[in-house]
Length: 116
Length: 111
Image (cartoon, rainbow over all chains, first blue to last red; front, side, top):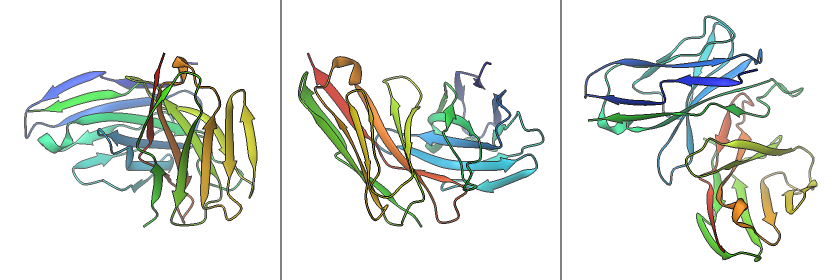
């Protein structure tokens, strides 16, 4: 199993450009999430999905869109990049626990995005 | 909304000293998860605690879940340089469908 894969590893954008960060998992996990990590601010949830066709907003959703057409893929779209979106982006997947919530999170290697 | 707070933000220790990080939630948690992130890496799951008052050990690491299920701690005995990294706790929100991470405790170990 490849686990959780993310592409690209690094990206530089100019303000106003759009792009899609790719995330895929091969573990048949129901849950998938996107986090951004800024120095000293931990991991902040952008969007998440509890299954194909179902997405919801996290703590910091503005400026980002997601879709979940298949179980495996969960792309993150930046609509019009801004310098404030310079960050490290992590995708994660997990199974649903017996209680219905997300279980152990498997993280991808991350995408380091710089917006100039 | 739910808040998960961790202290301290930074901890510097000499190799061989003990280390503890504390996690506090503004709401009661159904479970709590702990992760470790090495510098330049991605977070890696360490453990999940579910029961009130639960204590679990992994070699030199001891994890506790408070009786009220609103706080947790991670204690490392006799730190080694391989323990360097940032330790995060995470708990599900009231809806149960998303995780909220603490800000993490960054541990450095001087050899």
